[in-house]
Image (cartoon, rainbow over all chains, first blue to last red; front, top):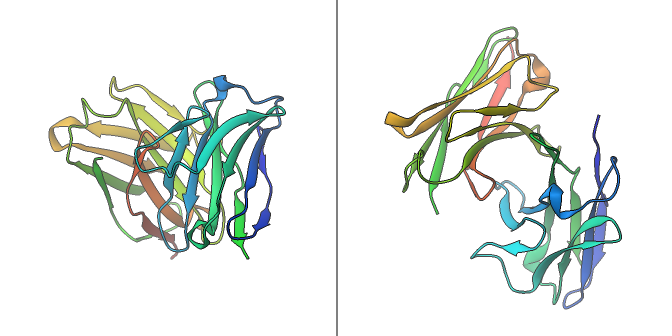
Length: 109
Length: 114
C-alpha cells in the first residue's frame, strides 16, 4: 500500500519561513505525481493552494510556493502570518489513484 | 469558481448503503472541471480520497474502497453522486465533494450507527 508522508507538526515564528515536505513510499516524487497542497483550518473544508507541483490558484497568496526538493514535494511559506496556522495536506497521483499525506499541523508561535 | 453542496442522510445503519449527492452551481458539470471527486475525513483524522468521475463518465476509485464504491453523474441535474455499500462505523466521516481538487463543498457528516 502506497504511503505519503508529511511532517506531523512544525512550528514557525511570525515573519519566518517554513518548508513542509511530502514524500512517497514508492521513491522520489516527480512532477508526474502532480503534487497538490491544501490548507485546512479547524472546522472548515480544505482549501486548495497549489496544484501540479507549483501552480497557484487565483486565491493563493504570493508568499506560498510549491516545488520539488530532494526527491519530495515541498510547500514553502514565506513571511508567515498568524492566520497561516492550520493543517496542511499534500496529495499525490499514482496513475489513476490519488493518495493524501497524513497532514502537517503548522503552529505559528 | 463553482459552488458545490453535499446532501444526503446524516445517519446510516451498519450494513446499509450510504448515498450522497453533490449539486454543482455556477457552472456546468459537463463542461467545467475535467473530473469531480469525493473525499472523506473521519473526526480528528486526515483526508482520504474516495474516487472521481470524469466528464466522459469514466471513474477511478481508491483501491481500498473499490469493491464498495460507485460514483455516477446526472448531467441534467448538474449533480454527481456517491454510493458506498456495506458501511460500518469506520465509514463515519465528513464527506466532501470537489471539482477536480480546486473547489470544495462544505462537507457533510455521515454517522454509521444503529
